[in-house]
Length: 123
Length: 181
Image (cartoon, rainbow over all chains, first blue to last red; front, top):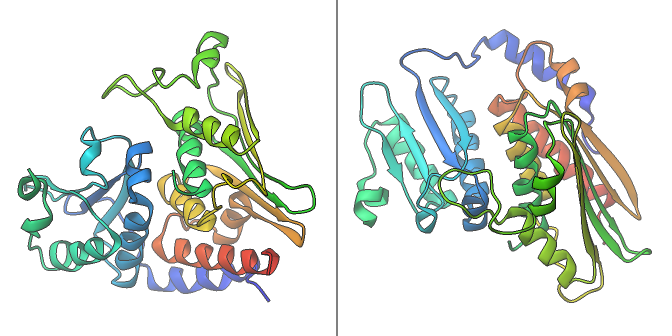
């Protein structure tokens, strides 16, 4: 039997118990994935899915993942931008799901920029 | 685009940008009728007759980074290549309906691809929108209604990673029950 929507009630109760809702605060990290025609055609969907999956699994409540349109350098898509408060923006280019998972563990968890995947390494 | 599911993601993004609060998506894969169709209806801002007449021209776009837009022209071309068709209707202030259909047995029929992945991506990007996704094959049909999901979740956002993962499994399992063996 496939899942039914009614089963969400149990998840809701569990999540309310944990009280780990993501809150927008000044110290939260913003991760933005380019999802225009260019990004999608280059493979942005599995990149976004991998980031959401990792952020959920690792329970990174200080990370907010969002989507944007065309960032402007379509030939470098899929592109992921990371905004950390008080730091310069990091732009990751030519991403795939595996690189995205690495970015989450290295950058979002350990706060080490993965230089070889950034736009400055590509240009 | 390699898969129809990527066109779906791309075109539905137009509805999001049109400020829609409700977006209905139908994906039908009908063997007996030999047709695959993708239809998206939204209650967004709509388009003027002049803009509507030009949307399948690649040199028409709403984006500001450059002056070409390829989403709708690509879908139209793919549908026509597979002996199908494309239509779009829109009214300012009311919304837009976009439909593309393909002859299922045509060699140029693109694979459907990861439809569930596209739906999850849309919901992640716009958790405030009431998406209603209807999927049908000869073997049956199912619907994912975000308004219904919201009711079950109380105040929890459908954009929470835990919820998105669960919805992805819901779609995959229901999809498996109606897919062609």
